[in-house]
Image (cartoon, rainbow, N blue to C red; front, side, top):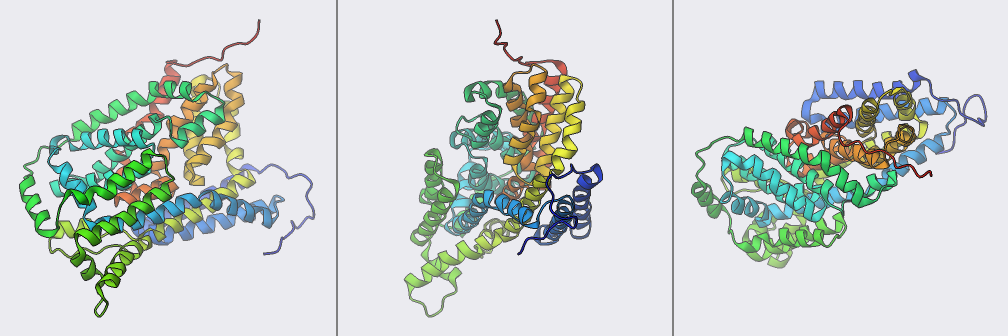
Length: 487
């Protein structure tokens, strides 16, 4: 596309956006998404939401063009945002393939099967949060936790007749606490680096707010626990009657866990896990793979290849005859992730354009400047990270952009840089999981099989963490001051 010039000619310096101009693309996006939810409900994720975001993006492009930006500049900003999210897109494809082969091999069911005998329904939600926190701390990836052990925990919840949305919220809470507490987490490193803080100092301070938030979350999960007359032997009989359940079926999960501990990239880890799941399915259940392939006339090796290939591409469709088992195992495939990827693409493009034309800076800078107390400054920063998460769909941008905007204000108030990094970590990282079109919320909803808006009210750690940060600020608790270098 050729460049289009501003109608008034070459612009040497661009005037700042007016408040009305900055609000226009934001309000357009809000109105169109609200209409999409009103008209289509959860089905809006499969196209209507994306159309609304594209329309809002075009409004932002027009606003930018009228304010002196060349169309090529805006296109490059959208493209750069998409390039930055390419890792997320490939990870989503890998998770789709993984869920397909793990469903076919019985790995998903095996994780739930072995957890079933160690977990009582009355404290399942509490246990799910603790397990997710432990694994998340070990592998430094909330996403990997959700797409592996999280799926098993949600599955066993359904078998017990409990609420899978609460379990999904517990998994998200625990996974994000563990990820946030890990020294190897990319989000933790970014928050510390942008503020110029030593990583160990940042982690030590972050625990002062993260630990109370997680403890409160655990208390809520314990309170929500429901006594149940669940009989694991009955479910065990159903599972054994449907699938050949052996410890070998857990091999794909162990491979992913080891690769994650070795800090392999998420896409590589997940895709290898998907391939191992396919191999396990071929070894332990060749008849099931051949039947799924529907390959009359093909020799066995080609039929097995087709079955695994289909599960990775289109997902697995279970036909055991047991309604609950079939509902849990019918999932996955790269194609299953295409609507989510579509949503990520358009949301990232919108975020790239509004960042380029300075929408968020125009809206947030006056609010930051008007913060007259330390409590208000912290509250403003928390609000800025949430707004950035909502409108740019990128947790990394929600970490770096508000942190840069507020850095001088923190210095002027004599606050230590670690207060800046702690506040951003307590708000930007965790709230990204609560927004359906944010890359994190989209990924978690797709992996867990629970809509983001369904689990979000139960992701207590993610909800409490920014609130506790604000409470600490207004109460003057653990507010570190900058050390003077004079004298």
